[in-house]
Image 1 (cartoon, helix red, strand yellow):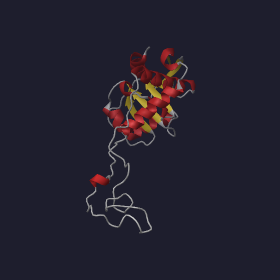
Image 2 (cartoon, helix red, strand yellow; image 1 turned 90 degrees about the horizontal axis):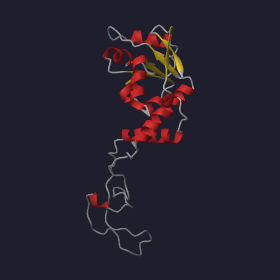
Image 3 (tube, helix red, strand yellow; image 1 turned 180 degrees about the vertical axis):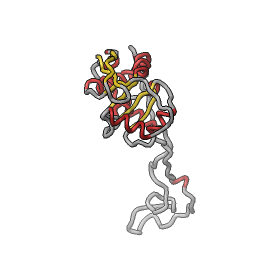
Image 4 (tube, helix red, strand yellow; image 1 turned 120 degrees about the horizontal axis):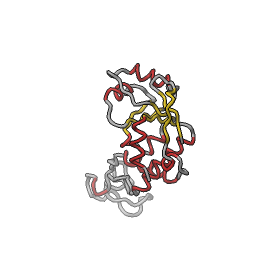
Amino acid sequence: MELEIYNINGEVTGKKVTLNDSIFGIEPNKHVIWLDVKLYLANQRQGTHKSKERNEVVGSTRKLIRQKGGGGARRGDVKSPLLVGGGRVFGPKPRDYGFKLNKKEKALARRSALSLKANNGAIKVVEDFTFEQPKTKNFAELTKKLQLSDKKTLLVLPGQNKNVYLSARNLQNVEIITASDINTYKIMNSANLVLTEESVAVIDNLLKA
């Protein structure tokens, strides 16, 4: 697949980039995409929720009412789950929500997500660029010229670029990520994917079969 390369003014440069069909042109595996997104979201959970069970509640162990004849359910001390302030039955405990997903499945999920974006025409490639100083106005103009200002956009850079990152930080619909950190959730959570020329090469080396 070949795509036109744009400059930061939103103009076609006349150059084209060839996207690797083994990464951007495969048949998407939607189930693996779902698994990888589920794993990403699971890893974002703190898992620190906790409630006290009966043996952890502080209180008297004296039996409050007699076993029979009261007309109500049997209960023992004030720690009983039947009473307000008592211990909770099978309450939440700290836990890790993550699960195992093989490296090949993760790579397949990223390739599938990229292929979905390519099939939908949601990928744009721009020339490598930087800003002399951090300025939100400059990045806002860039998204406007690329006709992406009203859409959720993920910009993939080949490496860390402080000025570009700081210029986009205050924009609500824009997220910056490096090519080495690209993941399925970020790709699927954006309406458009913007790649720089060099980041295409990094992704090719990272995900080539």
